[in-house]
Length: 421
Ligand SMILES: *Cc1c(COP(=O)(O)O)cnc(C)c1O
Image (cartoon, rainbow, N blue to C red):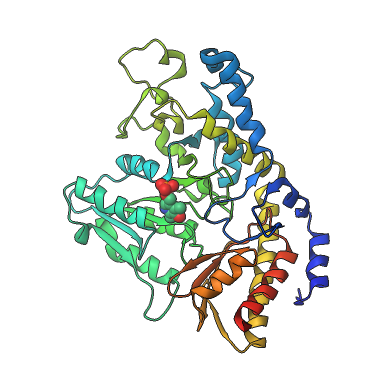
């Protein structure tokens, strides 16, 4: 498609966009009485207008039914979480039995590492990407130490090449080969939070498993953003949060994927609690743990239903729209944003360097050479919410659910003004 940096052109793309109407389905913060242009859906997604109804429903049931709400409310609480698994399974390409919603992300990754990081003999190494999200780094270090190893020996990072900002697949695969039979676990962010790169999860999973390692993915920036086929790719396990592209609200519930092949493994070590035991016998309060036999076996506590309500509201929207059409729109939208940035860079003879490689999802990370934090402030004052990382990287993630082509054009105009100022 040949793009144009004009309002008419942007509006013509919006007219053709079947998802355009969903902008109306979200609440936008306002600056100076106008809806903002929102680029931080990779950090905290906007609130769907339908969310409040789902939360109010729980509040009403609690008010009117109290403890009876567990079994006699319209959506009973004791198995409320089971409503989330079918739509989520579609979002991540899994079987329903492979999904469970619980806890928050780093907690879930720790719990999954209890099961899937089982260092033994010389097979004790974890492979991850260089400069992984800090929480993941702390997790790796503490897990390794918990097992009595030294992080310097046990954690192997896949490096970027000198002077480059992205990883090469070839280097990832070579590293897997190199660590070989010392490799216990591969655990990488499927979409890197900093440069927006999407890893080839299918190939990496296959390569890791061929070395006899287990392979898991942190999908915080991948879920609701890129195509995922966790089951057919043979991924061992994965976890993600729901407050980024899944629009479920600040710090909200995480979910896990455990591949079918592990669900009935009786030797699987796991930290267990009463919500992982069979429903039929749960309330008999017997000492014997009988795993449910689905990913719910990993559930420990009875779930925070008030937190699950917004997640369910969001999943209804994903169910209605489907990942395929979100991805289709996202590809054009992000390409249009890249085009606008290039146009402005050319016009103003500035040097914007998009460090996100072609394997990308929603996010473009851009080095604004020669610009400083004052530009970020200017954008904010003029109604554009972006994420700024020192020294001068701006992360732009136009979520296809609620971002329009006109937003991209208007952003370009404001950016230009901010640089000229
Ligand atoms: C956002 C994010 C997290 C956040 O972890 P929480 O436990 O939800 O605070 C973890 N890992 C990655 C890669 C992230 O992008």
